[in-house]
Length: 429
Image (cartoon, rainbow, N blue to C red; front, side, top):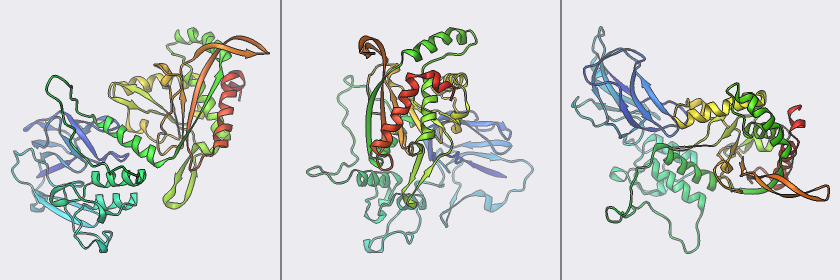
């Protein structure tokens, strides 16, 4: 029996991936669980395992090509099962519509019709009757438009035969969030002209970079940001860290300032629940998290990645230090599991580790707050009415002003600074 294995939905809203490497070829015998192809998504690089045992009759897609969830990956001949005529077709059912596409030439690299873009469906009841025209769109696109509150009938599709694609809906949503600006014409997708050869260097956007761009726009134009700036003198924290640094290094543990900052943030979040929540505007409610998952930004060769330390409130300074190093290294090697990149409730970005005193961090939406850490400065401070040398840590806090008021942010900020200035009190809490 011929079996078509399609690119599966691996969760977290991932809809597409780029083929990096094929692990199988035509005529090769494979077993259930064997890796078929290495795919780069916007979050992880993953090996996709085969769900069946058999002989590979064909592979679909070339290295470097983008595939959507539901696209055919391989065709497998399964031994010992009677072929069924209906199973020689790829049947896709989505949103109540059924589309059956014949498997044509087994040597072609073209993708078969499957879940996602490229599948035409009858217009649904969600298409506005007043448009007076047939709206071509997949059920996936229609659901996306409904979820984002976008009138699909008002969108000019860029797909075949004017089909409305997901990219068209996202663009309409982004323009809706930005709102009209006087004297400014709407921005439409255009091809940027490339100067003569040798004067520029062109590099294709990676999956992770495309997602960073999309999420930054989503966050900036969905959550009204307001940012506060502060400085805290941390000489006592520096002394404690220096005292334990070499001792822990002998055990293979790298102790930075970040574990202390995470501990201070978690303790402050327990007192200020508004900064550890999520807004559900669709149902007019706020969801307060009673768990504390801290995302931390990591600079990688492929772009910004935000691993998440789960249940940070239950971990010691040493445990936090170990997990920070482990996840940072695996983030740079693109070896993190998908579960390690999701479900943050608050995020921290340490731009000062490279350069920078103050910054305006963008919220890791749908979180409602993010703390920015600047570069520690040696500067004069006033202590006991005397000017003395001090070690000052610059901080910035961006919050979603729809739910977090300025006073809420200030009180949270004050508690974080108090604990960083007096880490002994923090460690015994």
